[in-house]
Length: 271
Image (tube, rainbow, N blue to C red; front, side, top):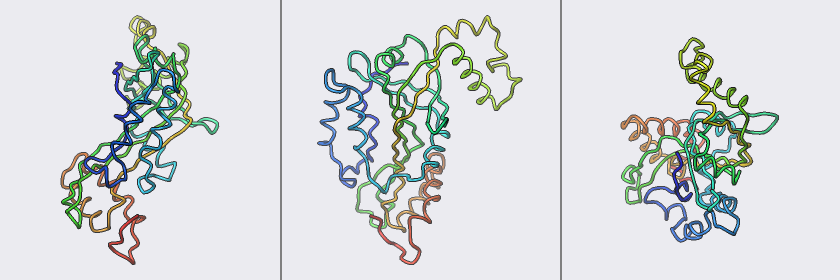
């Protein structure tokens, strides 16, 4: 699948709360013009601009291991690039996230001769976006309800260089992928080793393995860290009542509550 989308869609902006986070749509205009320009820096420039678009310290996860584990727990990534016509492309694929010799890598496979495959061959700079469930947070849940509503979510961006592998690399990835998602059940009829060569061989000709060496990672863990303690816990309560995605975000907020608030000064407003 290759879908042409302007990369600005991946900028993480809270719903109906632009002014709260000191952003406005004037900031988006230069990005829209600079995304994949034909003669002025291409995708690299667009990615560089994207990096500073939503860089608020209280929405950043500083523990690298937490960020890495989030990527492992949400492996179905948007993989974006720029084609020979300087148009953005994106596909969505499951990836493995590994550390080797102090470097980070994403590995997976895509179909050959698609628009995104051709784009990655033309320009090896890619951006992988990993996202969590997301929820609407009503301003009526705050201690002071006369404020704008917003949206809570987690997103990790990994920039890097994509390289394509040979058939041996592809087979290794397919073996690992099928075993992993079949819960390491080697008897499963759908794992790679149990598929007939007659079935496998045409598929191997149609797909290609890739590896992305990650050169930079950024994250947004937007979990109401800028709210006072009373509002924070009320948001958790409201989200838990919703179930589903709300419960996921509520659980993430609970993990951070003790670090966010000084119990000696309840109701303290975060920066």
